[in-house]
Image (cartoon, rainbow, N blue to C red; front, side, top):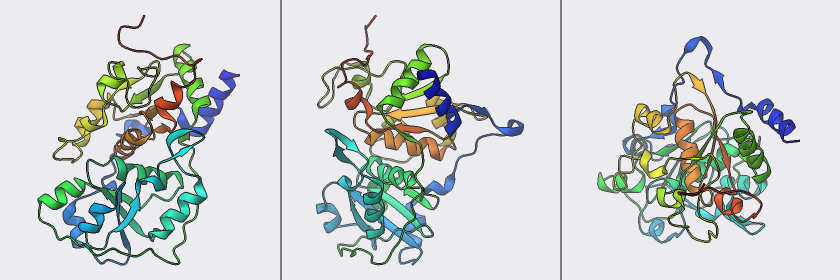
Length: 306
């Protein structure tokens, strides 16, 4: 049964492949926009700027002029007792339509810290098949504020009449498929790169993380802490593509099968965005480690385990 599921995974586009003619996998610079680029386009009718945050207080105090507010819980909610899951597709589409996002227009997401929340919004939009013209503002609010770009305290009302076509993408996977991938790795049938985006202490099991009863990580996963993709926490700008490929151990001419996860899906979304920016095609285990470790029959690894 598991080998049959594996065949379905390969048919669904998760098989590794050499790039034709030995060409390099190219980054997508259009997925990152500088604060300067955004500032020059404030007021552009074809651009929607979205401020993603859990608490609307800072948005109400100061935000990028013209930016609309998207609450964190709109793209990250509890489902079937598992926190941090994507909402149903129709609910997501309505959320994005309410902030004026359409399939044809451009959108730039940013958040108040290092990009986890903005990346989650991007991932949710990409799941709907509508992120071709979407990007993150590099450096987010910390860089915007530090460089002295204009700010506004005027809220921007929800958009009326925006429509968004849904074309669900298969990169969001569940626990059953994740179990089959782990089985495939352990039995040498296939080779998936499982990326755990949490802090090293949580990956190793030295610190459990909130609501984690079985510390450690999914068997076979490697740890690439999402913050290590940034210049620094104080300067949340993505590192250059060459440094990022080296961090993940990726080659420029091979499209590997990659699955990202974290504790509840937020950090994994940042890794998803970063890998997409580099030109790769990752999947995301949305239930992440909090779902995996709750199922007693599923194995976990931790530092010092045999």
